Image 1 (cartoon, rainbow, N blue to C red):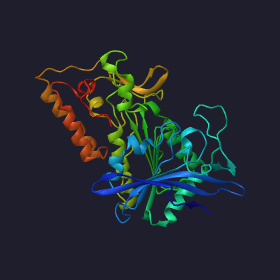
Image 2: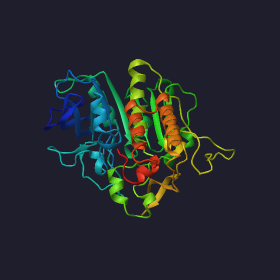
Image 3: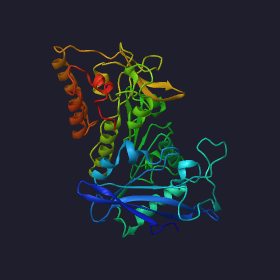
Image 4: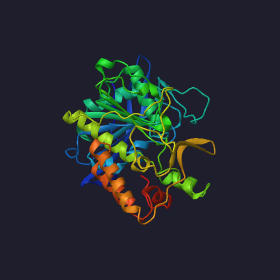
Length: 395
């Protein structure tokens, strides 16, 4: 019988939309079979008053290098906790970040044995068990804990390495461990147990695109591709790392930041589960007769979810560009320059493109307002030039 033990450490993390949140860390223990006991760290962030919030957990497996990327940057605490969600994670393997916390106040065990943490690039085989994740999700549902009260739904999300972990769960257990899954920027794995699955939403960028992931008519499956989108969107980290490398037009990677789309799609998925409201339609690329992505005269991909900057052809947007051996970031070339007289018409076109994204469900009202505000920061600059000049937010 698995058990979420009492926390070994608790910390107030602040107030979001008038709800105070606390982060608990402790031990999750149980067994995945005879002589296969485990003892691994968990981390749970919940309203301090369990009666507040949505009684809905977002589960995220830890990323091998970057920890809880959905909570900390891609979706972000302001979005998750500002919407009343709770968040949870659990260690499941001994490769670097997969353990979640390498120095808890108890012995780490997986498969019945004490484990030693290995680096992310180690050639040693990882000791891991995704059954731990399934049992943790089940324990969240079944618990009526003084820490977080009664749970109504458990969703899963993951990006890149943590998105791949979500797929690993499906290969073993199908889609019934979670009420909804949003998996992003990870190599596609064909779903199993299609007839019995819970809804799944796949969000991939142009850099991560896999034609095998394109929908086949399954009503519980949605697929979204971001035109011009890089694997890693711009953030303070990428701007800090790459500023000064190359001409100003590539400093900071790319303005095709897909985080606003990810947040809107996640909220749409929540409405899909709780209110039976259908999420936005699938959005994939257009293909030519050779099965390649069709492109416009600026070589930008046609189809998919289109940031207004790419819809208006403000530059050539490159989804994957090698920088010092890393091809996970984007780039752009030959940004347009406008005259003062051209700017009013450009602003109207940008606004129409942004309205269309909101109306289709790919932008929340706050994201819509943010884009409209940012495009007007320095007329006659385009949105792309505002980004180049460091005026545009990066999270």
